[in-house]
Length: 312
Image (cartoon, rainbow, N blue to C red; front, side, top):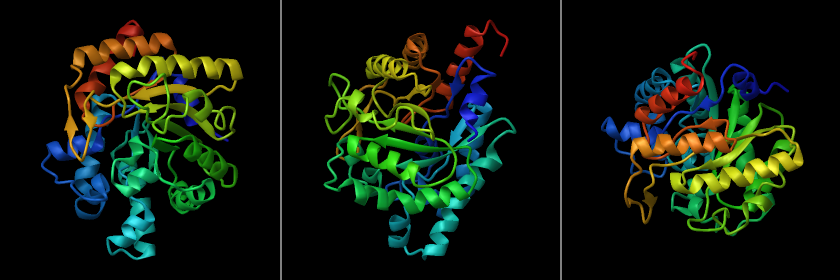
């Protein structure tokens, strides 16, 4: 199985991810107060999605993620699409990203947690009340459609529970397609636990050494909470000798509470300084999530040039 991420890391000291897609769409004037969130724009204004992808590529991103985070088949059916149209929209998310990419840019098909489908903030809690079989059944159809569209990677994002991580491992065992990454949300102020309270070391156990898992990390967490998670993941990977890339793409430092972002943002200079610490700790892929933008990607590109002595 081809691991495109490893191929990319042979050419660069670390991989630069994009930043918040919804953030940039909103800055462009899009209204995303909708159960489909940024996936709404795949239906209404796909050219806007392509333009935001392109903005991140031009800022220096090596890897962009599709607008399919909240584009689930049940969600699209509830919106009035039939099943064929829902599948076509998922495929279009990959086609649109690919059209914005440069020849060297990788495209990851975004797959949000079950909580993202619920659109009630439970991707930061993990309190679904579903068993593993139900989670496998929920994710499988979308994973099959997105895999067939030809992305370089699958991106399971904002996973808040150990049970859902185990379901993803089971699903990947039973299917074919590209390599994947799994990115967890964390419980704020915890001793490195995922959002449902499970210690991170336990949540990642089904993923370590999995033949289709290329990377394990955290996303949409406060930048100041990233370093302990990177330390834990690097230690776990080294102990297992499993070879996954360790990564992080935090949000701006604000918190999502009752359908609104609250609290102070992390200044760009501090974000970049923290990113240097994540690299020193062993992260090999860094980007931004909600409320970050092309400015963060440009800062990461500048950091990489500095780390490479200006060669890149």
